[in-house]
Length: 385
Image (cartoon, rainbow, N blue to C red):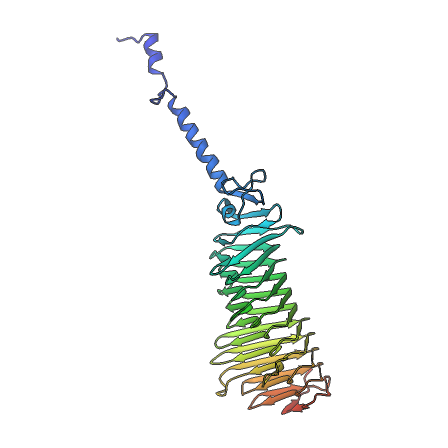
């Protein structure tokens, strides 16, 4: 029987080594550790940007990045990017769920230059929150461009001087956009809108101000189910444009002010097979159509001469006054408007007018008087509840 000496046994147990003499398993462990550190940096739950940051940093609070674009590359899905101090942080494309937040009192700027957009959201199932950002157009096209995503929340943001849209959103069925405590100014030149919303999703605007657009303050087109509350739309060309060429669009406007727009305060258009439903309550629509366009006024609702589109509008506890033109004008078959407990006074045209097949109904609970062109034209009364 063959025996093995102790020295031979020790030799058989000698650990494998690399060519450099480093034990094999030690080298493997080191490689794993290096990759783990890299992965941790690339998938941090919370990253930071600062004015003294560097995009080569790991975007930690001790070693922040300088730009949103660098920081988002090192932020994991459903993570956060936090702004530490005031500076400009550059445009960014978002392809995953993320929150970008600047605390109150800190200026987190994005300058948008010619041919560019400020923030592009292209995250098919993403939930994105943008809070406390200042987006300033320097010839750029769109401030926030919502290409696709499950949900976008815009809070405490200020967007100015964009050439096409301050906010542009194409909403797939089931998608949502929420805009809160946000101001938009001077956007929508030479064409476009301050806010442009289309598609089959849900829209909520609250405490939003849109001013100084040379085109339209808010456009809602073909499909959204939208709720606007405490919205101020002032000194634009058209204040609010609601349009449905196909499908169904439903909009409620509550406790809002549409003031001093060059053209109509609210313009509603239907065409094709479109169905537009709108409810306006507890709002002020005053001093609009300052450009004296005809036909025009505070609220103008137009179908088509073929009468194929449908517009169903309810006006409740709302004031339409001091507009150039009609307080409310409805045109063409398929347009039906009910007016209840409203004040329609001191417009230069009719108070309420229905033309070419449209129907306008009013109850005795409304005050309609002192309109220069006449108080009622083609208007019917209704009992209702």
